[in-house]
Image 1: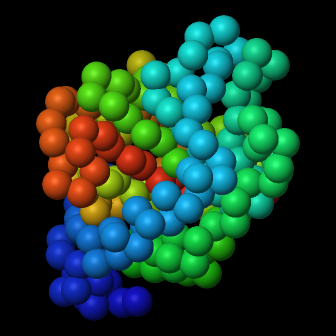
Image 2: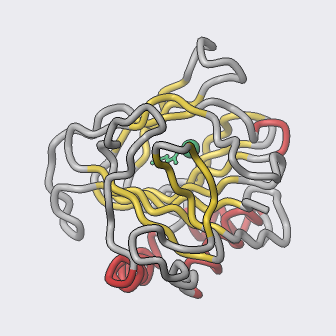
Length: 214
Ligand code: SIN
Ligand code: FE2
């Protein structure tokens, strides 16, 4: 998809770095399909609060789809082909997920993107994700495609050290943030989600994070 076409069809973009941008409203045309996919996935692999290696339950509830799923427990962080909760393989990535991830990556300048992992985060009001780098993947160049659905939030996008200055990026229902290449290892996080009521999702924010784990 050419940049001009993407801009006309899906609205504006904000540049966050040489290889990082926000595609405002990019997922809006397929939001209902994505939410139907979340229903299917979470029926087979329910949302749960993972435990950090330090022994704390994460406030954000998570599940996965794709050939690999991101997991955390007392032993550490890892990608697992099976859901440790059910011992079954993670549900396949819905076609609508794969298409949206590839189209968004393409619009951001990353052709032929085929993620093998999709983490689904569910934020209740008040929950947050502290600054972190996505570093459990073997590919540290392929982009991360992050789709916001439901309640709005403030995404923090920083530098390559935890203490570096961050920019605050408002993300709303249908926005997609893409970062890869030279920006792939930037620290990022989400400020506590403010209370509210979204017409489609009620009092929650859902985020789909696509990654190439292997
Ligand atoms: C993440 O970093 O895994 C999720 C970011 C988000 O929820 O926007
Ligand atoms: Fe992340």
